[in-house]
Length: 590
Image 1 (cartoon, rainbow, N blue to C red):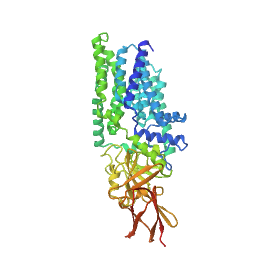
Image 2: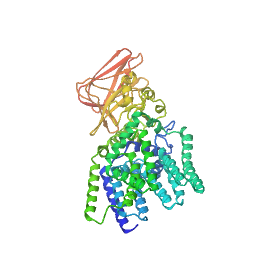
Image 3: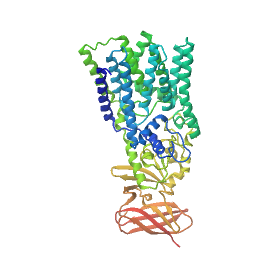
């Protein structure tokens, strides 16, 4: 690099890491879903989220392979995802600078566009957020540069690496093949008079990327038995509701990135309408195609306009080329330079105040979920089946067999959607209470330990089986409180029956004003206060039982009663002193 570019690259790295530190330690729950696939893949369990019939609950195949490579070196998987994201982000900066330093373009325009890009919160948030956006943006950047080379030189020297980038992009996300369609159509259109070039473009930019895609389709069909990933079944249904959401998503993203987006549109206008620049037309085509696609699928639910990241790459190129084409900014004027710097600083500061960007600072519930997962792993058997709506953090950290109640990582749920599918919150519309309860989960967990919510929660509220067989428990640990629903008859967390005994875990007992239990060591114990009556109701055969022992942390006396009514047995306990109860053991009364 030339001296000016070297200095600027170093400055860019500093700004980038400062921005990352502001949003650190943000991590997306969906990235933890991907990491559970990586986790199991490295353990030799295949690209699966659970044992049994595998489903493709991820949409970032190449990203998962990249993180797996780092994980294979013994690097923590969350750290691996962050390293991969940061390397891709820095590579995007370097690739842009390295290309334009060799062109007859004022470096000030390049620096301005790159600074606008890296001070957009999206750039830093998703560098550390754990999902595939940095890799996707890097490949889009490489594609743009090779197309620009082809257009500028009017030859096809870089068409082979272009085909590789297009192929890799198709492996990164299912929508990556959209760029193959747009790019090949564009190159065919501008070379339509040259039959030799048409043949080469058709073979290289269509056939080679299609082979990448075909290889993944073959893998998907042979391994998962499907041609479409589960993510598409859960998230994609084209309805007016989703289209309106998608349109509003782009309005918010444009306003949230107003300076770079406005300059990007201005640059595009200059290139297309003032300079009749062919590459400007390519930028326009890709922008329209991508925005249309994201609008149709309903936008996105993650912080910092994740799917707008690609548009920001488009705008970076249009700013550089557009501003250079008009060349109206006099960077030799110190007042103009200071003014531009002032605007950039104010712009960077204001963007952090937008709600969608601030959410990346405030969203830390994934760490609460991982903490809960660790406690579940330490407390309950390895075969404990949990049903969750937060399908990333809790299953990833607990490594327990899991049911994804929202369907992303489940085979049955996406294939049996409710009639209202397409009218609710993106990716949170599905749910089937009968199916979930039919799996007999030991613990049901909403969010990271909260009350019933979403469509599946509404169904459970009205389900008789859930209301009779599941106990709501407020499990506490240090400053954390988790609402957990325990299956009284669950194989791993419920009542254990031996030949002549019933062992009832203490956390299944409740008081009208006290549902609290406490994680202590590797146990979940029930605090019982002196004089309060705690009870549990359970189904038993036509047998009589009596209290054998109450296991607690203190040797104290209890008043106990057992009552029978309507084929139900109720067990009542009143402690004479405060105590932590581990279990109550009943024996058959012969």
